[in-house]
Length: 263
Image 1 (cartoon, rainbow, N blue to C red):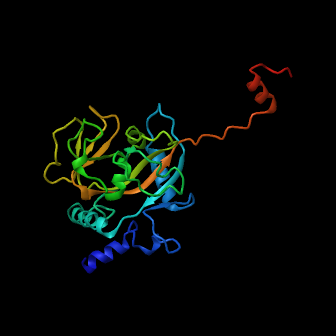
Image 2: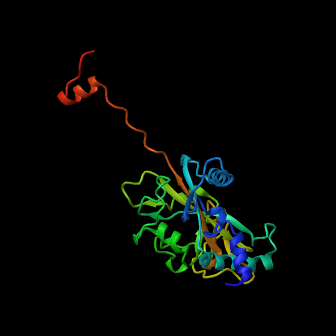
Image 3: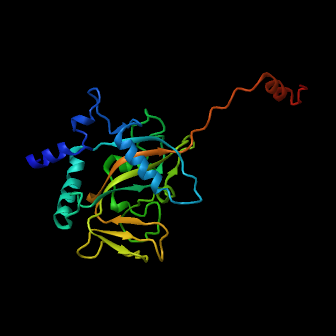
């Protein structure tokens, strides 16, 4: 790895090797954020503002995990972002990088508690597969055959839309999860109609943005290279089941004998 690459990786806040991500001498791919942290507040705000489906009650965020990456996985993303920035000259100086949501299958209990941070090896757990090596365009369409804008990686600023694609395969799961991803949008080509045969954006553009209009009720962004997207946060949300109160003696006896007790 070149010196410049090593320095850029050290500066990246999602690097597993970054000293700021090392807690008590231990490193973990998932770091549970405290509720009073700036990153928690930022992601929570994106989630709440992005929940736009009027008929879906907005759930509570139960936890947010920061996702850390080995240098070898981060470098292609950072290099791609640098290349895009060179021609788009985005104000954020990061290739018009945005934080966008993505929902997928979870077959394990990752994130259910602050201690559930180990990735599983279940092949049907797309969440852990993505967290292990990031997105793979070759697997596009594995879950949903319909691809509105062709073969790419789909994300959205609309958290309630991404929630439609979040699915728990474990019967023990009580909460839901969404990925918040760093996406190098670059110069987006805006479309209002479906184009399922696309394999890349038009020349001079870096991504496709589906705009609200003819075929879309909520916007989405599609990238056509793996290096354009890296998961940044895992949002765990939903309503935790309340602990059932202990039955009173009267209720207990009534249940046993299946007859009501007189007050």
